[in-house]
Image 1 (spheres, rainbow, N blue to C red):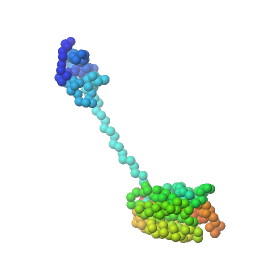
Image 2 (cartoon, rainbow, N blue to C red):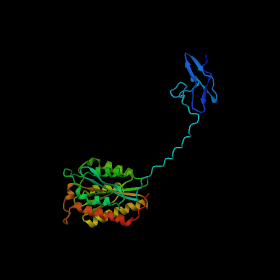
Image 3 (cartoon, one colour):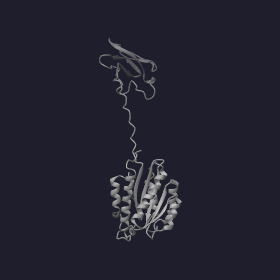
Image 4 (tube, rainbow, N blue to C red):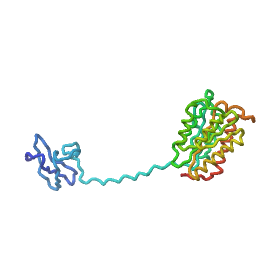
Length: 289
């Protein structure tokens, strides 16, 4: 074995055994490099010393550097990534929201033919809160807008707001909420149930949002109001996408008798169920976008 001093910029010869794999034959000590003579049946390649390697490259004195495989297996191409499926939505959606001191979601907008939506409409009389009997129109409008915020571009959205009384919670913010509906392009159709409803406020809300005001006092007139609002929303959509959110007053006054032996909320329950049947009959084969 010969010991010689080799400048760091020169090239070091490394010998690889073609039969036994890699066999690195060099060592460094005290600034000198020991080079072993080549053996038979070995292939020579030229490899620069450590000083000639760029930053981040594997260096001859790096751990595991001697286990070089001159015949690596070909890499398999990565499988193609399938695009994430888009969530389908039906052409016409219906949602239900209740409100008293605050607003709360009963059913998010979905296919009006869904069985679970009809079940939640029937369960409206069970959604009263024993300690929350006030009327918050502001919360009803804003919560309805949040429900429709995720609707696709081009969807025509509307709120059907029904109450039997006067707003007595967050009243100073009602018109700010109405302005938010105007900016979002959402119409608010208001329904005054009975003679104690605040007709002036409800009428102004519908006028500001290009909606329609209606007064009802019986099941037949309430069903007619719900259907008329749905038809008007469909006409605005012109065969495109639409979303109708029913915002129902669930203050304590809705437990009172409607004058025919039934509670007011029982009439609303029956009218909501009739509206869903109307949707199913009118759009039996809704398009899925």
